[in-house]
Amino acid sequence: ISLALIQIALGGLVAGLDAGLIYANFPKMGDNFYPPEFIEKNVSEFLYDPAIVQFIHRCTAYTLMFYIFYLSIKLLNEKYRFIASILVIMI
Image 1 (cartoon, rainbow, N blue to C red):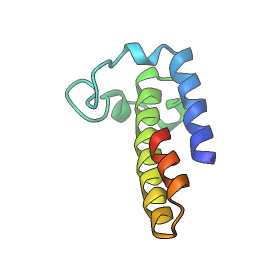
Image 2 (cartoon, one colour):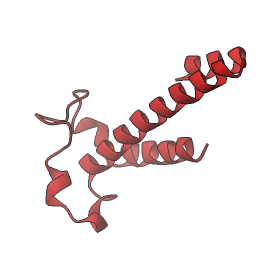
Image 3 (cartoon, helix red, strand yellow):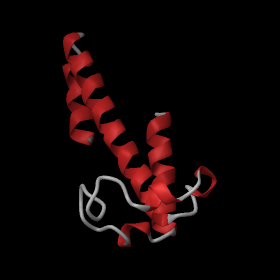
Image 4 (cartoon, one colour):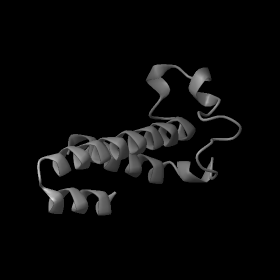
């Protein structure tokens, strides 16, 4: 739940900074998986740079997706098929 809340908060930052307009291609950001701003900026500037916020938002989405798939497989083994299928449908 906390990872989903972080993802929602990052989505608000992406929307507020209009970060979705910078790198509209997916899954790459320009020519790489990460934006060039990621290497050029200091850690203290990460939440102020729209490209970095968009990159962190994407990475959190990947992490959340893989975790939900892992949790669904684990629930399938424990015979909670309905809950597992709801999780997969949600993702």
